Image (cartoon, rainbow, N blue to C red; front, side, top):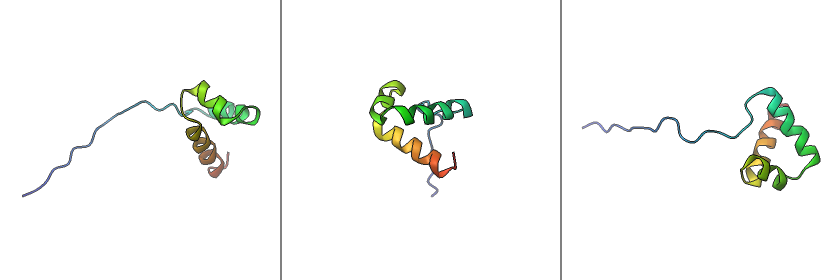
Length: 61
């Protein structure tokens, strides 16, 4: 008897910056504002902003 797993496609749209210009804007804003302030702008939690910045730094941006 085989078990078939179905996975959801799609889900919630990401609020993470997609383009290089949006990424640069986030980095520039992070230099001038706190994660809490940016979280209010982007509609996410401060930890999410910190995670995005950490990922960008690891990626060499």
